[in-house]
Length: 255
Ligand code: HH2
Image 1 (tube, rainbow, N blue to C red):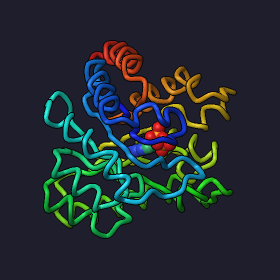
Image 2 (cartoon, helix red, strand yellow):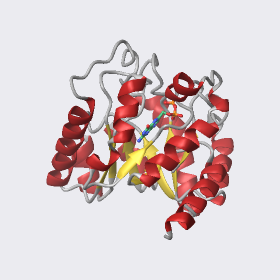
Image 3 (cartoon, helix red, strand yellow):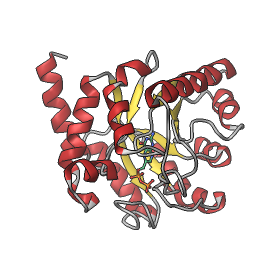
Image 4 (cartoon, protein in one colour):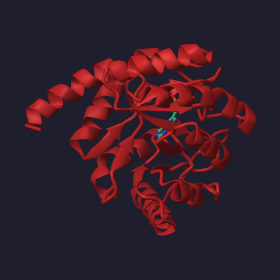
């Protein structure tokens, strides 16, 4: 899954793809580089970020979703926590909803069910603005696993055709929480698992890379690890490099 952030303030590429034509061109290039899914987002959920008005978010993502869907080269995902934005994106052609908040909006599961659209259910503790202020779990793996499994069950019971679960790296987690979750990926089945660690602060804390753009090697280490431990999807900014790493991994594993 390649990332297209149509935001001014995303933590690693804010402002680079704000103009719809530039964002579409970026999405096309991610598809050409080997992304099967292109994830279009219009609200940064980095630590400390403030929520964005849904009209602003919709205005950012809709033209990009519409054009990428019209071209038909990739599966188009909309990265949103808001059912009203998801609904308009689905009307514009989005095939998948990526909800980092894990269906917190009560209208999200009924919408995906009615539209027959699969959903990625992320785990987010708290709100982006404050989520990194001393997050605490008694047992992070058990708590995240139970939450994902209950939200997945709720979605499927509501009629959502299929779900992907995501432990939410960096979303209300310390470095140690992220490490424990990545070591336990096999426990989040039976649903397919997505991991999104691309350029995240966790890599800086482990391997001293203050500039998010210098975190590609660490990102690849996490995502290759994730693929080896059952992740079905990795969410990445640097698609060509991921395609290369995963092609080699697949060959070594004989798939
Ligand atoms: N992480 C980000 C955004 N969307 N979706 C899923 N399913 N999993 C993730 O881990 C995930 C996600 C944050 O990364 P990015 O989009 O690069 O930054 P920002 O939130 O600042 O736009």
